[in-house]
Amino acid sequence: MNDTTLTLWGAGTMRTHRPLWFAEEMGLRYEHMPIQPRTGETKTDAYLAINPRHKVPALVHGDVVLTESAAILNYMNESFPAPANIFVAQTTLQRSTLLEWCFFSMTELDAIGIYSIRRHEDLAEIYGASEVAAASGREYFRYQLDRMEETIKGKGEFLMGEKFSIADVLLKSNLDAAVRYNIELSPFFSEWSERLGAREAYQKTLAMNYGS
Image (cartoon, rainbow, N blue to C red; front, side, top):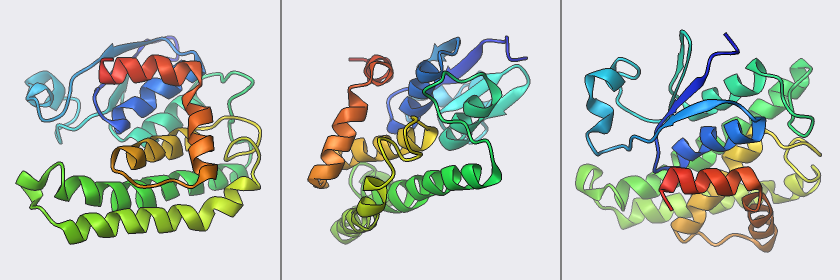
């Protein structure tokens, strides 16, 4: 099944950018279906058969269907031969450490921080405007990031040391969101984000994802 072309569904958000970027880093063959949320494109019968929750991204690979960006990244990381510069966990401890960073980005930064802002600013017509909730999301994001700065400084070039990993994709996407939502980054994280943003695969898929 590894010879089957991947299909990656979704465009227009940081979450849809993640699998596109990592697929390029891995050198995978894939087809991109750039449907966008809240356009009606995710509510067609064809897409609802893939994800009944009508959300993107989604990955289809043969009989495999995955619909959460972090799970998609992990699947690509462990299902295909990785280039020498890509981190792949070899032990239970390495895998647990990798997942610890992934969960930190997905929960503390994305779900609690960024999405609190998005819900009550960008999606205020659905969830209600709330300056307090949005401000709390910004404060929480910055607090969590600041608490981890010294730890990350000691890791090396990337979160898992000297090799690029799925955890770097998740953290970078949250730093991108922070900039969009006017969360000031420290000089360290600004430089870290700029360095990852200069990667060829990042630049290529950023244009694919956002249509620029």
